[in-house]
Amino acid sequence: MPKMVDHEERRAELAVALWRVALREGFDAVSVRSVAKEAGWSAGALRHYFADKTAMVLFAVDHAVQAVRERVAAANAAAGALSPEFVQAHLEQLLPLDDERRLESEAWFALVVLAHRDPAAAERRTEVDDLIRDSVESAVAALAELGGLGEGRALAAESARLHALLDGLVLQLLARPARLTPARARALLADHLAGLAHRRG
Image (cartoon, rainbow, N blue to C red; front, side, top):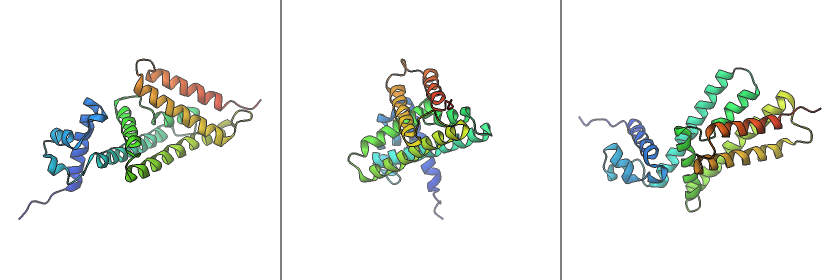
């Protein structure tokens, strides 16, 4: 009787190989050939699961989104009640403050590049960007609920400003890690949130 193939188990095996390559060599090194070699597969066998690099990037981004959701859920459970620390911990899950989150951010940038020429990547980019924007808007709304925003601050404008700050921190953490350390990035975010949540006098 032919042996049954567990396709989900095989995809999970390939996911581990993909992230090992990315962790060791950077996300640019991820390709059908490099991941197949890492997994001990032939490139032809791997293409049954991922036809090309675009498919691999989409898979990596989906993995990253799920990982962020799990970390946010864990942070929510640990925090218990809504607090400024809760908001900070929530937003930190979007920043490349460790190796895992660095790879997730690199996967996001790979998706942004692919989106210029691939419709599927462009659609996924929009979906993920919407998720990030929703997360940022929720954070600002939480600060407003905790004590109100500073005088003259509008929810939509402050959400856009915070989103831009996070994007800038992601870029600088990836591009200049020696200059912007995780500790400094956390401090900059905390300072911005403290100013944002300044109570009306």
